[in-house]
Length: 82
Image (cartoon, rainbow, N blue to C red; front, top):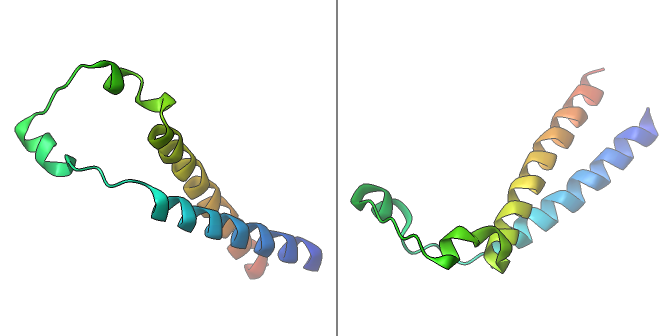
């Protein structure tokens, strides 16, 4: 059980560092909440293929690493309780 704790701590640390780096290098979305209120609806090529761009891939990996961080942290808390 001690080996599992160490492995999960190392994995959690690596995910945490990668998540921090990804969050820091992402570009700020200028539209943000104002586009939701005003209703900015641009149907151009960039909006349709947003997932294929560098920013789209960074956003997807940030979400994936965030979910992985939560799962590993919950697993760590369960192991430490037991």
